[in-house]
Image (cartoon, rainbow, N blue to C red; front, side, top):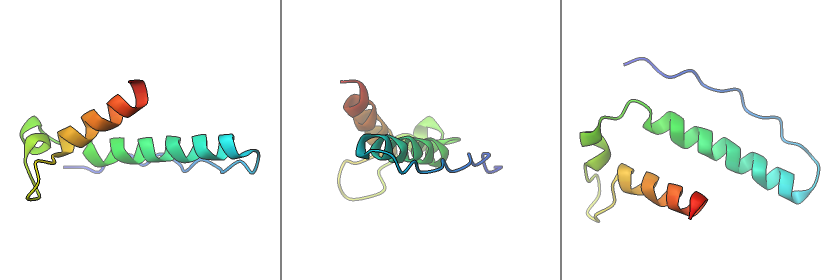
Length: 68
């Protein structure tokens, strides 16, 4: 499997606190997408720890936190 193209890191604006926070959130969104790109549905549902946590569940949680 080939590694997805890494997006360039955004330049951190030294402006106000909100723009800095938004830049960090944009970076972390890109990181999550890059980490899960190429996972099959079975891999996304597979439990890797003793709890019922899965990659798919984590993505679902992040989506819910973003959009309500």
